[in-house]
Length: 317
Ligand code: NAD
Image (cartoon, rainbow, N blue to C red):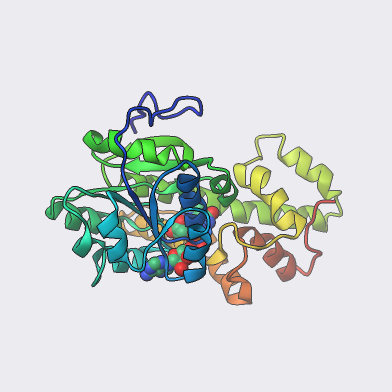
């Protein structure tokens, strides 16, 4: 992974001197709305589209330009971002009838920020470059709460010669950009990142349910766990603000978590790499979904295991 010298601090302003581009943004869900809002708040012209008209209207009221279709976005933008649930929606919007590839202007750039599988991102790269368009991927790291504050991290995959056009815009949505390599390497990095994040969800949940069952003071236990090498970002930054205070609104929807751990598991299968913990965690996500927890934050795994073990739900005081 190469790391451009001006791409990893909060203090530099890599956008200085960059050429102005009209931006298109498709997919205004939990993440996309916040990312696009950051662009609008920095004075960018952003043409936005989502199947959910409420989300489009919400952003229009804050200064975005409302688009009526994917084609409408493409006709008005020099660079287009998608932030969609997964491979199916991305392929539909990018390659389907009326999609980006049919409508992109000749000099425009397309960057997918969604979390998709390796095959999907490679198919997109081949399809767009075959038509002489610039394509890259920039999946997003950190929590939804970071996206709300313009503090996201981007795992950028794109040919080096296009970095100067794309990086300045990413810096208007976040604080950190890692150039992971060629197009598709952002997605490959993101799959590994999320495999670890989602395994931690399960480990944290087992630990907290055991602590509760042993009759420990959970506040003490939480302080210990987050002060030793047992700690992890999910436990430290997410758990106290979500399940441990009883807030199960997504953050990161359990169904999207299952999608991502399945993508990592499939990547292991297709490259013949054994991933025993990842595969076990994938099944846990499946079980929690089957118990009716779709639509809740991934931290709801803690409540799931409390229910399975007939123990009180762990909460901080
Ligand atoms: P979300 O489900 O909240 O939002 C998805 C949006 O896409 C919705 O508004 C939906 O209406 C829209 N959409 C679906 N199909 C569409 C289509 N054909 N045309 C236009 N709009 C369409 O999901 P999210 O949490 O915002 O996540 C988006 C992506 O980012 C996912 O790939 C997810 O894995 C990834 N991600 C999420 C987080 C997180 O914490 N939520 C963090 C990093 C990355």
